[in-house]
Length: 438
Image 1 (cartoon, rainbow, N blue to C red):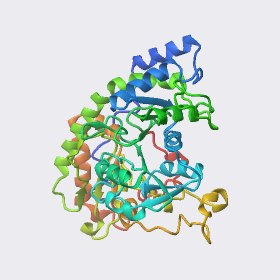
Image 2 (image 1 turned 30 degrees about the vertical axis):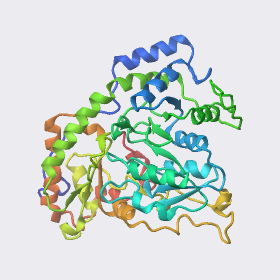
Image 3 (image 1 turned 90 degrees about the horizontal axis):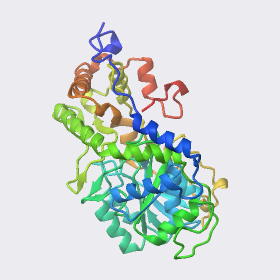
Image 4 (image 1 turned 180 degrees about the horizontal axis):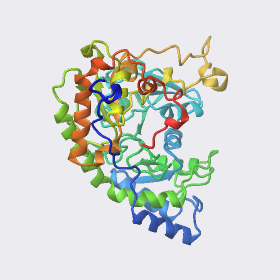
């Protein structure tokens, strides 16, 4: 019998962490008001509760206009369409992100161009962008990942230099600020998600924010079946879709918005305490905070497990042991999109991959982004944000478990335990019953 729980020892923690999502009677009352109103859907657009929430959300982030939509993926698609993306255009994206960042580009028959991420932040490496720009490049799509922001100063400077649009993927960044300006408000448009794991949620849902009235009008037309926007100053007409949010979702989000900052303060304080406890531990590394990131949006807490300091014990072995100690964790949270099993690309389905080329562009075989690949398959450890809504004692349990596994890592080297096998699987391979609620 070993010291670690995975080898028969006593786990650090048996008590579950605080559940997610958080709700109170306020959400129930808000849902009841919508129910009794019999006005439930996204039409008449943008409807009442959804419009009120979108305005508040945009104002929180320093943008003039906001539109609540069906989910975060279509929020990116709407933003790209509003920025004028055309078939065949190229969009520069970080390789290390969720596939839903890239899918909207494909669905608009445009072409993603993958660029590696910065090892200090895991966000799009601004130093590598310019060499990826071609005459076809139309937009930059930085992703603010986990608890860090892409370098928006450098990105906006490059965009101005080359006449490109900037769409910020802010799915992790609700309430975050760069130079005291809200996420999504530095670029031309910002796209947010309210999916179940996000910092505020209605199960599904999304939002687009902008301070450009023409872009705002386009977002409305595209999301509302091609109908004219509310102001219709620019008179754009094109085929749209039904990407509207319901009043039920908007009612929940309107309540959740009220507690966003209070929850964020708790998360930030707890993450800072955990990091202080772990600092100096051989074999663990930490993402750097840029001083221009003036308010952290504390989504998942991410640190680095460096297997070379543990005589080659793999991250999957570390994570399997940590999970058995009672700490929810993940490693293959994201993969480089071009290698992901959730990104099967057949050029016949996406004609732009063949235009002007002797052979169709091979998105899966043309890229090698070493920082993204190391993060995905070797070193990144993700802890879910909801466990940071707890007490200082909860943080001590997390730190104690991590330090315990580091101290006794020899016990799991080469161990074929189901928890370790599971941690080595891609998200597409993991059994359905394993899907977590966070």
